[in-house]
Image: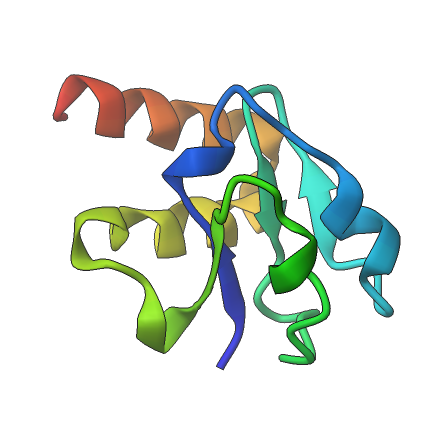
Length: 93
């Protein structure tokens, strides 16, 4: 099960998780970092490195942030899609 970066990363983008990822599956978008779920090997190395506690195993993701599963997966559709989904979440669309 892949890891997910959630709301605490929005407009923070603390990059220490990128430095420890052994497969380089964490990407920077305009407003947050995302984990590409198809590339994540579920090692969890990124979790303790996140100073804002934004990274969760998908099974442990708080329900109020469930939309972040799709937001992270949107990386495959391009960083603009991640930004669009973030805007939709913020506006309740």
